Image (cartoon, rainbow, N blue to C red; front, side, top):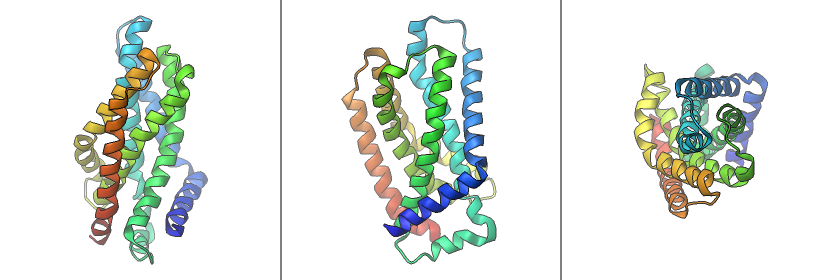
Length: 221
């Protein structure tokens, strides 16, 4: 557990000192929201609520791809990735530390993006903020779990900026299905759709276990 907390603390302190990743992710997410806002035709409030779940998660996924791509890029400097591989602990705990840092950073960006999204599309998210945060957290756990694993794979490839989305997006289908469905239920009726929540929980569990076990082989390669 100390390895998890040490890596989490290192990544958060590094990000706090530079802030380059979180700023880039936030600006990119805001631009995606604005582009979607101006790209869609004039609409009424009901149509905005119908489109909002999918559009919000599009912004979240694009921001996550940008951040996950940078998660291991800094570790290439001074061969710090080899230092992580030599950590005196199970490689799975290294994965948990990196995934937790990605989750915290992405969560901060998602909170700011939700505010911009609500203003741009005139959607009231305040009444469902707590339940929406829970749904976003569930979706983000699966996203960061598999994204951290594939980020470690893609960082050593020649075209990592292209490779990561190609590897990651097909696997995110169940996460997006559950997250968008649960978010739609909240916006339409204010209640959670438990079938969507169950899908997210199962997906998070599968992605988390597979990534925890597979990270050892990825770091060795």
